[in-house]
Image 1 (cartoon, one colour):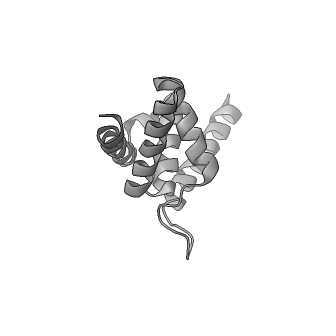
Image 2 (cartoon, rainbow, N blue to C red):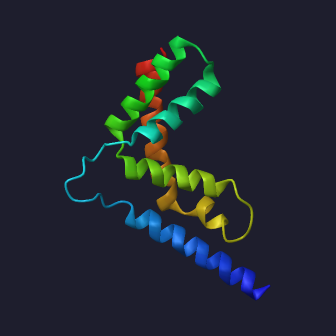
Amino acid sequence: MIRTVLETSVRVGAVLALLIGAGQAAEGEPANDYPTNARADYVFGCMAANGRSRDMLERCSCSVDVLASIIPYDRYVQAETILSMRQGVGQQLSLFRNAKMFDDIVADLRRAQAEAEIRCFR
């Protein structure tokens, strides 16, 4: 029991360190450079949710481009990680649901997604 709690605490601490450290882009790296696989993953997910047509391919591609122009990739990864952790259960994971700092990161992503929705889906 104690070992499980300690292991969970260590995992949560590692994720927090990753999230905090991810906010610093590597020197010389473009701030909004999303890797191709991240863009493709976003487009696949978008198309799965909205329809698998040529029109949706163009709209979803537009959407990830708008997102990348608004929010740096490291911030996008942070928000996606937080959202993923919020889906978990347990006392340790409740930190991701109740921390204001994490709410702000997710809110940035939601605002960028709303802008992408306006520009690409209307």
